[in-house]
Image 1 (cartoon, rainbow, N blue to C red):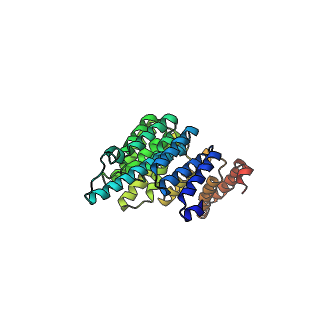
Image 2 (cartoon, rainbow, N blue to C red):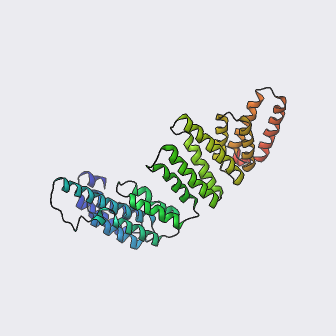
Image 3 (cartoon, one colour):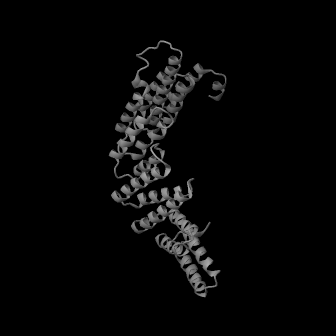
Length: 320
């Protein structure tokens, strides 16, 4: 294939792909590869569309094929938009039937999106997978808004959906950075109130921790740290956070000079995950720091902690 592409043998390559599909028609990847060739190398949206429709007859529930079909229709609309822009610049006459607003706005892609959800229903991740494809194009804002609204209505109890909706607030161009982050927090607060699951609290906490290291004024960074500590404290009371979140929480408290609270959080973490090597090392490291102060009681507690860690961490987990 690479040889034929290098020498621009498009007709031969098209014939070869047709033969390959007859043999490997049960492989969705082959259909996608063939349609990409027709769309991107052979510049034929009609052939690409025909191949993808045939592929869906063989694989009606293939998420990758539906996603590629959606992308192909957006590419087709993008090409028409660019052609239309060039014609307008040259004041040339155009075929109005070909250059319709519906085509240029991606109506065909919208139809594909709806058909895909009919074929593969009740899958929030699949529903959300169309959004990154939309972001590759600069004329899809309206369809993106519609998909976000649809996915929130269709999957009101899905944590990933709430997380995506909250994070989307950062991409809005309606205010300053601090105001956009406040909108994110409001969405997460609503989600944590309605769902109150371990997963949504972990996602909320992860977002707060991510924002701490982002650029901003010293005042904004202080507010981020305060928001993170508040959310983590509340989340720790309502749910079981992940090992990674506990680890980052302790490190955040240490950065803020809150050693006592960091130690208490490390204890909470090892109680939640008694066989986590990483959390036990973190807890032991904190007590090791206390030893440097010369506190004899800490030395005794350190020995007790080591014994406790050895008892609770399973050998198969601790072995490298």
